[in-house]
Length: 243
Image (cartoon, rainbow, N blue to C red):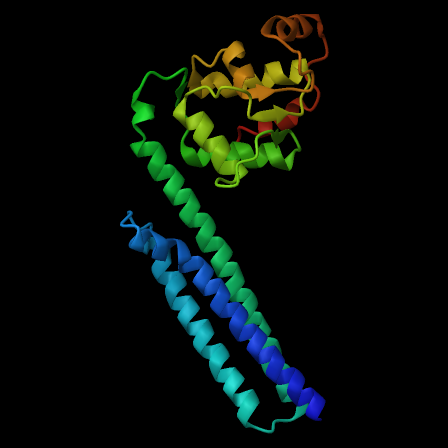
């Protein structure tokens, strides 16, 4: 029985410490911004809810921990309380991940709107909404049509896609690889440029490379003109832009 008591005590401490670590990790960037006199990226739309949830879950966890430590409950009750405690820790982890992702997205979109570079001459004009670009990227990933070539730890892949396409400024070298052949690329480009004016095929290939890494606008057009059967997985390519 002593062994079980030790296990319970250690489990409670681990869960409480993990919860504290997750909460601190969530608020650490805000603390650093405050002491560096930077704009604090607090978003009341979701940070208030997350803060209240953190507080409620942590207080409940502490309460359950105190019950486990100070009472001699039956084993089945101890297991029940420990299960709830673990679920609360998982809930705090999910809140931390979700909140951090929302904060990153919010900061990115704010920088896109306020970036002076976006007021400079653009290489092409984007008329997709940020939400629509996100959906396009999600569909490309879902159908295994895309991978990111450049690692950027400060920004997640979807946000990198949105930032690149929404700014309308060509990168110095391609950032993404499309798992498409010449004909599929021609079809995708035709649909995509509907709301990206001046995004010609040469400019498109400065953002994306394709299966044939040596492909050029001329070789892609030539492949298209010689093909009589249409693009493979054309239905999936069309679905990318629906919804």
